Image (cartoon, rainbow, N blue to C red; front, side, top):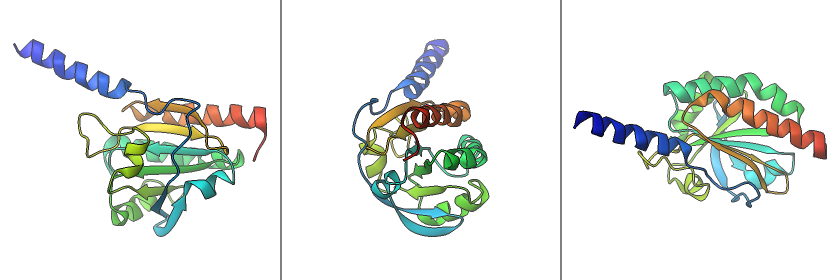
Length: 180
C-alpha cells in the first residue's frame, strides 16, 4: 500500500510540473502590480515594459525558498544579457511587497524587479497556479514579444533551465526582429 501511495504522490508531482501554461501565440494578459527593484517599490506595468522590448515574466512559488533563491540568483547573473537585448525581466509571486523588497535586494541582487500578486490575479490569468498548493504560483516562465504575443512558456519546478531557455528565445527574437 505504501508503494502505491508513493507512486500516486510521484505522479501528482510530475503532473504538477508538466502542466503547460498559456500557449505560444496567445495574447499575454496585461497587468499592473506593485513591484520592488533594489528594495524600492514602484508600479510595474506590463504594457509600459513591452514598449521597451520583450519581457521575460517568470512566476515562482515563494521568496526565500531554495529553488526560488537559485532561480533569482540565475536571473540576476543574466540580467545584463537580457538588458543588452532590450528585454525586461520581472518575477511574480504571491508574497507581500515588504518581503519582496528584501528579496529584491538580497536574492535578485538589485538587478531586476519582483512583483507582488497577493490576490493571485496575475498568476491565475497566466495559468501559473501550482496545482498541489494553489495558494502558490507554479514555476512558469514566459517570453512576451513587444506586440503582447507569448513567444514561449516553460513550466518546471526545477529552476535550472528557466534562465537558459528564456534567454535563448529572446536572443532568437532579437536576431529575427531586431531590438524594439
